[in-house]
Length: 289
Length: 274
Image (cartoon, rainbow over all chains, first blue to last red; front, side):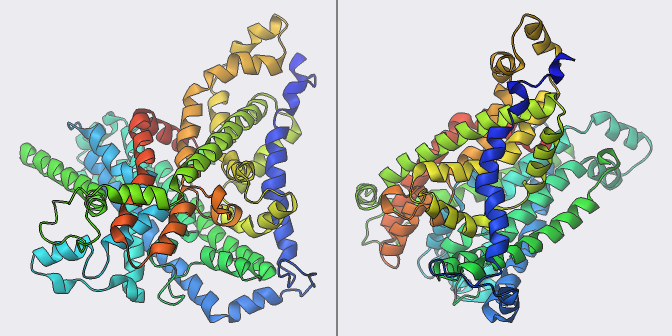
């Protein structure tokens, strides 16, 4: 066949692959090597085996960063999906102004999460920010505390701001999934006597699996590698308590612990990989096999 | 009963929309207050219309240069993603050579790895090739991170195009390579807009790579410039910070309003096929 003849068309994937190899695959492999050394970024590196990895699991700050990262993800990923699906169910009907509403709800997601963090930092200022003033005008000023000064409240603020920012993104994906479900299916289920809850459970949810899968996987990856919003809202504080693994990697790299920071990155890779694989397995449908 | 349910639905949606807009409204109010006014003293809904914050924020921060830098990085990176991604997707979708399958497999399995995982070794590489503090270096990094997804989206789209489209051109003596550029590439417009939308805002807003690769203040992008400016002023000039944040988000909001029709479509097309 003519097309089998090798021509330029056969090599069209090479430029993309070359770029990917240089800026992604090569550093990935190099990182594995670096993680086994004590390199500080300047002087000669010495091979130290798995010392970086054992050091990581003995470092209190590092272990706390794992806890913070996991807590943030455990709070964010389910909440984002619940809120996003709720929004999508509300919007999935013939209502006026749907396009405008969808646009407004999506708006926060296009803003830099770093800037969004700063904006909420301003609005949450104790005794001066707008949330304090809203509460104060209702006579409940005492409800407001310095929320970014304690661990629990800081984590709640971080999760809620993240959910506030990205619920629109999750919603848009769910909405597209909902609109792809044929109306006849609901009619048929109704004829068979299914209640509205039954229709949701046996028609909507199964047919929404592809959207659920995308949203869950994206949200797990996104929340476990969170960086920007924490940098601007709490800066990892108070102390290092709300520091996440990505921030730790950056700070260790700046702190001339280059080898060590690549070891942390490898650990972080597995922390992300495991829940992603589990959730992909759980949301596998017959059609994908 | 049905009317009541509908009314409830409208009410909920209106409340959600308010929830999304109020922070921006209060940022705007804060940005227009004089430095002397402690945040929202008095009637919190009426600002002082003190535009000097904007002038001062623009002059003292590096935000103007940063916007140009962000624009250059975004345009460069998007062009690379679209051109290299579409080319790769075409040969992978049409010709089942073993190395095409291998390349596709590698790209797809690495798609899920977030950029932070290899940032440190990449940082040392960037120093070696003198790409630190260069816009082209940052553009290449951003393009690389987005490349697998773009190949994936283009691949799905090209696979759905019938082969007959190019075959007539091939019979007329056109090569597969040039028939891609002449016939297929122009047909890719919908997925190109999906790619631009899926990645454009993210590259413009990139911070976790910029923090490593753009340290020189002349090369800062928007989030970097803002964060440096805020760290110098933090603790004091809230109104100035609010005004500078407004300056930083206005271009993004304008772009969003211009593209919003394509945006939702592009997002869902890109994501659901991806």
